[in-house]
Image 1 (cartoon, rainbow, N blue to C red):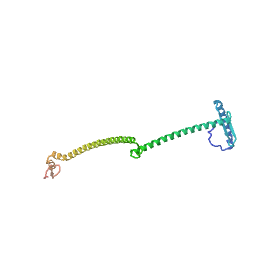
Image 2: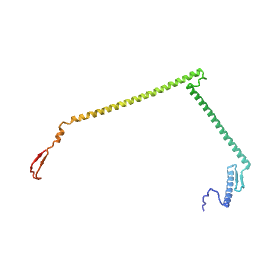
Image 3: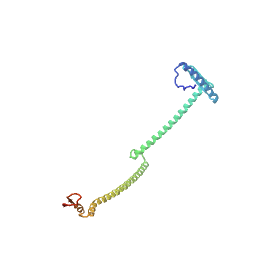
Image 4: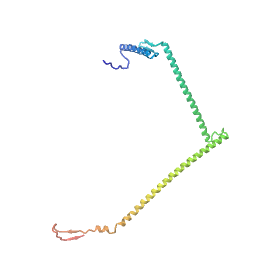
Length: 217
């Protein structure tokens, strides 16, 4: 008979719960013993039942295993704390460097605006003047470059507008000359001749060919 899958939840029946605890506890202790023998591992297993009864298994001494565990945890915590402290020191050092750079940049910006120059020597002022002149040359060069680009764009736009103007002028000229050309091609009196049609009105019996009278229009 195939056993169904056990649901992982608390067993409500106390008797069934106690039976399951006893079976699973013996199996767990057996697996721990086999693991210690097969892999030469130091194992310490502590189990408290629902009633508070203690069950334990240790390959050597439970106290020695617990002391070894606490020493390992302490060492791991100390190593982790040292790593965190080292990271914090690096972050503080980096923040201090960034703040120093920001301070230098702010001082340089104020000096460029002509502020806080009282503490500067003549050599520092000359150096600052040279920097400003170089900056002005760069700014003017960029300004002239942009102006030249705008001039080229305006010239291209002017050329395009001239072409459109010439095209519109040709179209207007054709529209003015076309009626005169049509009037010259049509001869005078043609329409009158086409409208003059000779008609006859015959009165008599159909089919006899007798013409009683004829009226010309």
